[in-house]
Length: 312
Ligand code: NDP
Image (cartoon, rainbow, N blue to C red; front, side, top):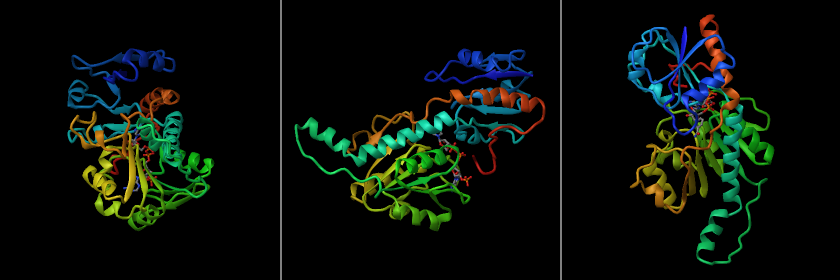
């Protein structure tokens, strides 16, 4: 059985460099780099990044497992031609989850300490002190308490914020109040000064943050979305900010990436954009690839396998 690495990702690491790292734990195995140019019947597992389309499938007649580098598997699940028999697994990087918690803390503190206002004031040579907001009096609601959301909630709580979390199933995480269901969502939003989105893109979460849901946000709150752009109806978000109901938004993910030049987010004074960089390093989880290769050949349970029916 061969393993194909076909990431087509210029930003993070080349296929050849990843092969070197994976080979440490799979030294005897045949690992090949993509993209495939002819049928590869020996390949039963392929490692991909965000790229995925039917091209790959047509060359891999005996494919059994798609291993995602990272966490989001929406591009694979969106492919209606992907046979049900092909399993999908994601990585479980603690380093990436901690990096995303750092990103959220950075953003929350930038608002708490009025940093963006001071940047604007400096460009206009305005000296205007204003009081910082207090950590202890601030509530943060985290949408999604999975691998990454749980880490974000724990780190923000340890920093001293009051943290609430919303997920499909109820959670017991020390110091975090758990909410579920639509009523739970509305309750949590009404209490949160910051709402952090770290949900996967699924049929149930896409467009979840629309005008109706935005009406339940606390007045003057801030949305920080780092999961997937599909969560937010972007026109509705702009409307909620322009009306003064929301203070602003920080978005690491948007509906179309790279964001088109004409997109109104680029020039909005209360929307801060980063180019899908909140979670970058997954080095600590590269060993998941070799682990899952061995589990697959031995017909044992995979690490971080996606439940295709629920979409994450
Ligand atoms: P997990 O699959 O571990 O967790 C998903 C969480 O969302 C779970 O708590 C789950 O609830 C909850 N959830 C899913 N659907 C619903 C729903 N309909 N209603 C309420 N809660 C729901 O994912 P991760 O935490 O690892 O990652 C989340 C997403 O973040 C990824 O799917 C990816 O798209 C994105 N991401 C973005 C990155 C970036 O750089 N911007 C980097 C890495 C990931 P339950 O626990 O009950 O199942």
